Figure 1 (cartoon, one colour):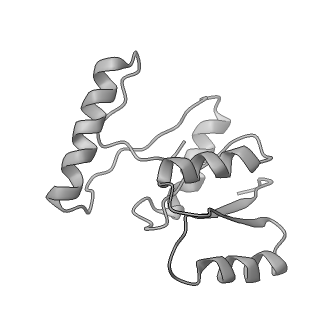
Figure 2 (cartoon, rainbow, N blue to C red; figure 1 turned 120 degrees about the vertical axis):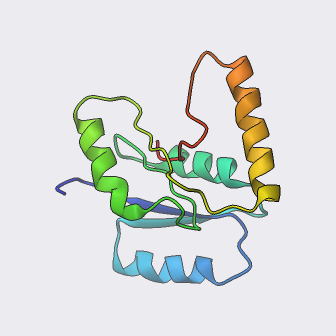
Length: 127
């Protein structure tokens, strides 16, 4: 895939050594950028922080748990190059416990009720 890209890692106050690992990689590869939050603000704030410093023409958003496979990025970029403004995927199966999936289902129902957009409930965060 021939594309000018950057990889932005947002450390949302992770308790492990993620920040040090990203700093090490970014010293070797200038396309890798790392930023860290002062506390855990949540995934949406992390996505927003990454998009605010992004310098390219499009963004692909991935959670650190890799439930959305990085191997699919090329397919999303191909659709974007076809002229689509927004590209999203639908998961065949999501690996969540019921107690985790219930708030997600409720929030998407709430969003659907108040929004003019219709996004499938099993859509990923690729954007």
